Amino acid sequence: DAGVTQSPTHLIKTRGQQVTLRCSPKSGHDTVSWYQQALGQGPQFIFQYYEEEERQRGNFPDRFSGHQFPNYSSELNVNALLLGDSALYLCASSLGRASEAFFGQGTRLTVV
Amino acid sequence: AQSVTQPDIHITVSEGASLELRCNYSYGATPYLFWYVQSPGQGLQLLLKYFSGDTLVQGIKGFEAEFKRSQSSFNLRKPSVHWSDAAEYFCAVGPPGRGTYKYIFGTGTRLKVLA
Image (cartoon, rainbow over all chains, first blue to last red; front, side, top):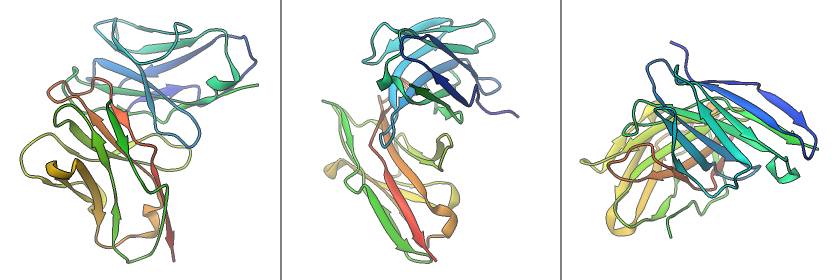
């Protein structure tokens, strides 16, 4: 049983560019959450998708957007990249919104 | 404000010694409580969780945690540490009854194990 898979594993972008990160949830899961983990910090909640809609959002600007597809996979898009967006981006999936979350390995984004 | 505090940024223990990692939280009601472990360059693995009931929770890899409502704490313990336990440990809270809505994480405790 494949767990949560994220792609790519590493990415380098230039300031001002746009980036798309992808996440496939654990088999049977229908809810996807995204977190940003800056170096030396704990993960911070970006947003959560359930039934293809954004259900809750953390304190992140509109430059951060997402999407969930009918097969429950999800994308995180970040526009107008800043140096401060450099971080490990973690995807977590769950069955519904009332169960524990399983995390992927993350995508390491470096903005130069 | 909702927050999680892990007061120890770094902890070093000898292999075979006991371990306790501290976690305190500030929340309107008793939240759901979690401990995750992260190895370098890896994602988060759930060690254990507390939703309700018995305040002493058993997890994977020989870890346990105790919920103390009066102290707003959820400390992680292991009686005998193995070298493979070296990693970063995160305590997290989530809204009770709503599962995976917006977890709030602490800043983590990095564990070093001496041979």
